[in-house]
Image 1 (cartoon, rainbow, N blue to C red):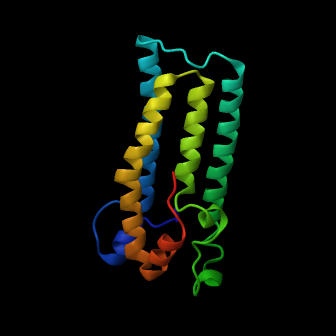
Image 2: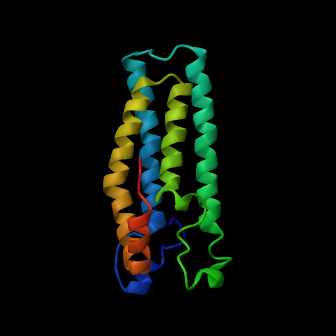
Length: 166
């Protein structure tokens, strides 16, 4: 769950980045994918999406992705307020976390693809997909390892039941 786990390293005596550090850097990869895509589109024009439906789809994707990110962030942000209530059971099965282990990444992918469609940037779509694969390999795996160390069997059970799709 993408919550305030930055102090994990202090609690376990480990060194290295916390969950929020990893997440912020993975989000930057998506930003740079769009910027790099726009730069490539300037030098190598490749206009695939010149019609209004693709722009409408782009707006819808941005809207849907924003809702997903907001839902994930408010769900994980509300954990601290309800911490005693969730002490003896898994708090991972709440909000969008019931359906996917990384709803913020999923929402960000959808938003970024929507932006690429909206601005008619073929290379942004390509680089966004590459960014998604890279963040899954480098950032999400590290995030999950931190959560496994912090929550142990509780998180491992959650990983078995909820897929990390997309």
